[in-house]
Image (cartoon, rainbow, N blue to C red; front, side):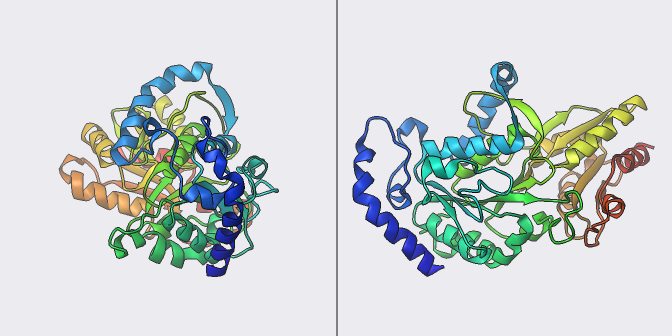
Length: 396
């Protein structure tokens, strides 16, 4: 890892003289030299990188705009929305770079980085060997030195090989260095149960990473929030893990032409209701909405919230819903034991016990390796009919 980082810095330093003149240009040029980028800042104080409350304020400001601006927006698939986010942030900020397997000329396994190496150069879109622990560690080191790396896991399950870097370094170095280092790194990639990908390629790592101090986690579910969350994660001063579901890359939606971000700590109200709160995220959002059609036909009025922020939870939005409906169902694709749903249910009981008229229920995946056979694979994941049955039981 140290040798790789030294080589990267040495190569970049050699190019320093060739591109240094571009820093003084009136119009910012696209930087392809990551060493030079590490010493530069985002052009223009008005566009300075948003943090914490500023991200939330900006997200709130664009939320109302988005509803009207999508009429003049453009339709994209989710992987295209993520690609747009990368292009916009890398163009705006020369410290943003991308690291991972096949992210260069190949364009990434799901084409999120297609064409980026031609646009920004192979030092800012860095192809790596199959060595997750090493290139994730290099990303942490790059973040310590002033870059904003986006580390792509070809499959999130592979990042278990980098768990030491993510837990002991990525999440803790800001604290253990006494605040001397910030780690503005984004770790993203596909995960979840796909279509017959087998156990090792169907991992849901939310439960693995949620206990790491200093780490934020978000899960995107639509092209709109995928782009907005990734842009906000890149601008954050904290290490952020962005979970993308392998079956959602081809989801299509119209998004605004204007620049926007989504708040990293805010849930999304998908459907207002009055009888029961359904909390979900990622792919299960669509299973829930399928179930809602049946529930509405049966006379139920469920409220659906996409929690999006897996750590920390948006207990303000969740709490307001619980105080209105007094019943809760959590639907997740994560494992039942030690999953996001277990943590969320505990938080609801701790904070809103007096508001509940029924015990909060949680539907999760089975605690088994995901089978390859399609019928067995479906049986391990929560299906819409199970959601309907659970709501009927809660509201009985």
